[in-house]
Length: 147
Length: 147
DNA sequence: CCTTGAAGCTACAGTCGCCATAGCTCTTAT
DNA sequence: ATAAGAGCTATGGCGACTGTAGCTTCAAGG
Image (tube, rainbow over all chains, first blue to last red; front, side, top):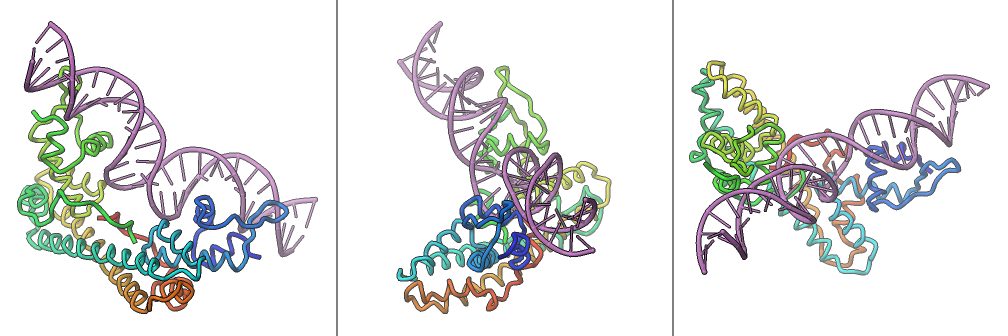
């Protein structure tokens, strides 16, 4: 039987995070000691490791909830699981494309800066003159939380 | 004189976002009509365009606040501005590296899925067996908000 | 002048995925 | 028996907004 702190150490989570997962129903309510402290078993350890690993891959808690549900119904087809992973992959790819465009513009902006006074600063000038820029400011927003 | 809605349309922002920027002191309090509605001039338009453009490049509101302050003292050296932009570039590059690692692992995971039943699903298996994975779960967290 | 409908107003709650704090209680080793 | 460390609940905060409720104001048409 593990205390919450031991579980946290073993999975690389924080104690508060584990309690948070319990609160939102992602982790089950564990047994308690006679004094009311949480006590965890191996199933809890596996489940939390699964969650943390999926988080490391950038899956949202909602997606993880779905993956856990699916993994509890072993005779169901795997295609839904696959679809969730594909969607995550597409989100990651979209973010890479977006960030590469940002990188390009930042490099260009910085490369043009000659190091003079602020009044001649190319960086500020580029930020001021929207016309020179490549990004589409009206575009659709984010996709994924930071990973 | 622009209404808040017109300003929003012209800069690709939302009305609430503009009021939020005012609330946190990023935009100045504008003049008001006799009935109490906000009225904006060209300086406000320029400032908001600057903010939106910097946001599009992933700068935090704190960094933008600093850039705006610097841009108001035109005889100061440009090196501080440059440093902020460099830092942003490094953050973007770090995020790209991280996301590319995620992409690789997601691709590997999905590629191994043969489409059978959930009980044999490679995706779930990879998520369960942390040992097979490349990412370091204990690592330092994020860098930048989603862009 | 009056009405109507869009747009604006304030204030507050919610999003996501946690993290931190305050002020307790429990466990465990000495 | 005591003291340190870990656990407990409850609540608030982060960043950067977005959405809602319940009003008021504005501009155009009749």
